[in-house]
Amino acid sequence: MTVHAANVRAAARHLAALPGVRDVEAALPLETFSNDTYRSEQWNLGKVSAEPAWPTGDGTGTTVAILDRGFDPGHPDLSANVSGTYDAVGAAATPW
Image (cartoon, one colour):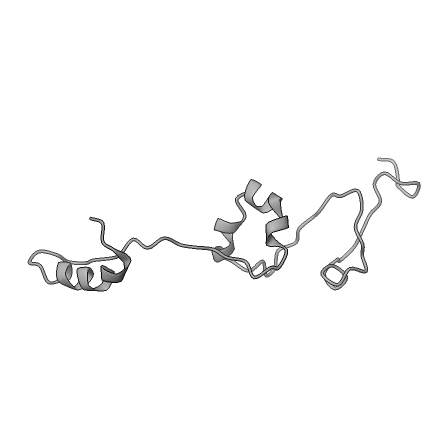
């Protein structure tokens, strides 16, 4: 059944009152959002379907390893959140 958004509650009440109806739930779409000013520049999040995962947790207790050719460890978004670095290709790299 399709119901205009403005009528969802009224339709649910009507259906719930019908004989034999045990439960009525509206199938409302889940919408994720980001308050990140630069979200539109983060094309990669769509590629890995990150947004649908956002409501499932906040990352507490999760460690993420990022392999990158370089980053600015003094950047305000990173400085307090980087637990360590390792140069796997530079002069300081230790061969396996």
